[in-house]
Amino acid sequence: MNVVTTAIPEVLIVEPKIFADSRGIFLETFQADRYAKDGIAASFVQDSFSRSARGVLRGLHFQNPRLQGKLVSVLHGRVLDVAVDVRVGSPTFGRHVAVELDDESRRQLWIPRGFAHGFIVLSESADFFYKSDEFYCPSDEIILRWNDPLLGIQWGCDEPKVSARDAEGRTLTELEGHLPRYLAGDVGAPAEFHYR
Image (tube, rainbow, N blue to C red; front, side, top):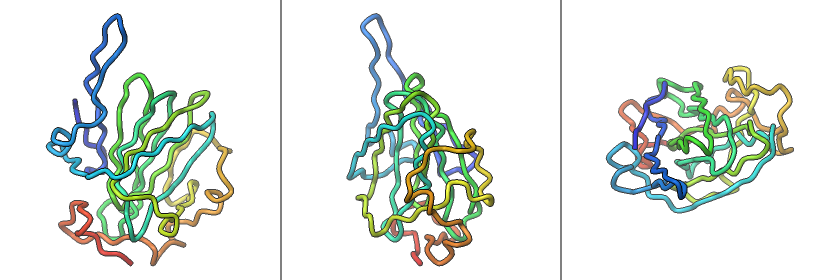
């Protein structure tokens, strides 16, 4: 596999090695030792799946204080996947990475703890797969507004289909006091974050 560093160094694109022949394809979607060697040393505890129609936007979600790192991929279809750094004090605070994920390239995106995550469906439908290194905890979930002008995310759709809950997300400014903190030297390990 090939690991590509993005404009935010902790957010990684994983390009798996795909073996194809007349029967179909084979690839490894996760192998703990190999991923750890390439900077993804998470201990995953939960897998999740969603199916969404064209134009559906899910996000931007994160948890605090029980932060989640996520390794995400598309099993069917195509999406624009977005990770936003919400770690107060981070040199890339408020910046984002946007990457297309699809069922042909089979690329994955590693979204470390301390990042909000969301995606919009670009195909007729998309099956989206998440591996998380912390359990989903509804009481810890925080929603960052998908169209916060401070973020400058180009979703490619002026009126996406969002849930009522996501439509009521708050801006980065409004979330002050509810964001995880980053201290110089932090690399993203859970113990190195300082909450609230």
